[in-house]
Image (cartoon, rainbow, N blue to C red; front, side, top):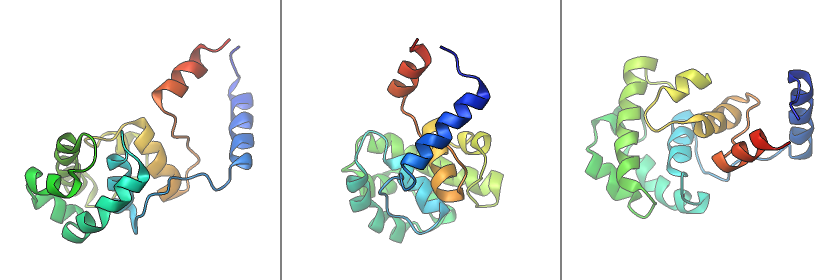
Length: 151
């Protein structure tokens, strides 16, 4: 069964109405911290991320601070999280991209967010929805696969 755009929009609006407060339980104070926290949440729990981010955000409160840090230094703060070496690499590169391409600000569009290192569709959707109030779903690959192939 293929849904029309109008019908799909109606289904999404109904789901949002059922779960109006659905959002991650990540702790953040600004768009940069939200982006970092969502990036760190891949393959780990929000609770684990919330334990790591206070010290990380104290050490690197801005994209400028994180871009100047070494990957190994960033990794020390997130070493209890899964895939922490890759995440440290992505965080450093993403922070530099924010400076180079977006004047140090987190962009608001999916295409711009997905242009950042370590940011895929799911992360972009969470940042757009939670950070900027744009209706978007963070759907993992398993849900997406099942939805696309369901008859």
